[in-house]
Length: 70
Image (cartoon, rainbow, N blue to C red; front, side, top):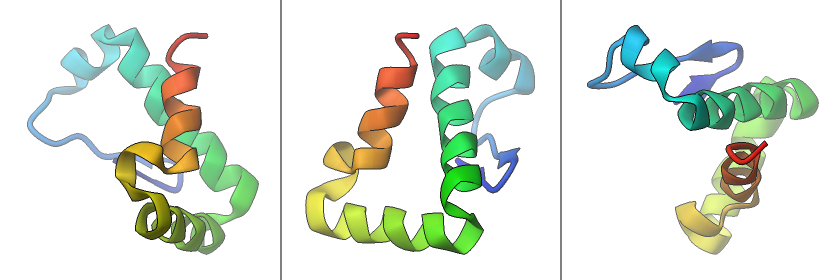
């Protein structure tokens, strides 16, 4: 989970996270989204997207999954 510039890990170590390139790219995309939309702006937009489309179809999650492939 990302809040601003900080990636928070749950049930995982830093080493496990850093070994998973796709996961790192996914979370770094969220860091960029926070920069682009502003802290509170992103949170509001993310929550609104999740309410409208659900977690998986949330455009910010779609973008982050696409970033895994880069």
